[in-house]
Length: 181
Image 1 (cartoon, rainbow, N blue to C red):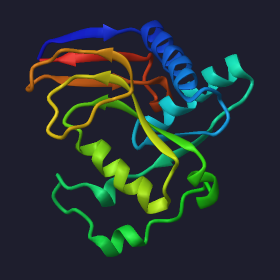
Image 2: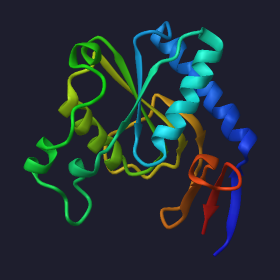
Image 3: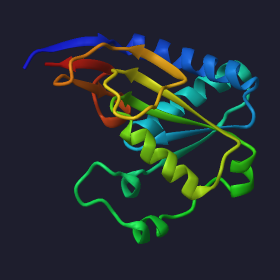
């Protein structure tokens, strides 16, 4: 299996800072934003984006982790509606969520199915004023009509290739994005 590094630690840092700037620019201010990191790597990326926004704007957006497992439609053993109903409430109160712009944050946008599940999970917790999507890597091959509002890097890839994200937050020696054939 061949591997090609497509983003270094510096590239990732630069992309996350740029994503933070774009998010604030599109929203018009830093207050009223909630960054919802889609489990597994999304929360770590959302915290880094929040840090970049705070460094520039002086206001740190709220960050929540969003577990979409119960809302997946493309995995064996999908949980039923009862399991989804048993998911704990978001740490963000419904009234705060209703007046907020929520930015879903994920590592790689591929088929769009994880984002679809994230939208369902988010609506389970309440209805935000607006929802946007920020991803570190968009590799194409969508199966659903979903598009990211903010993209760190577009990576043309073959369907059989894998995009591997390694983050220090998860115990990796360095941050990097690698394309595996």
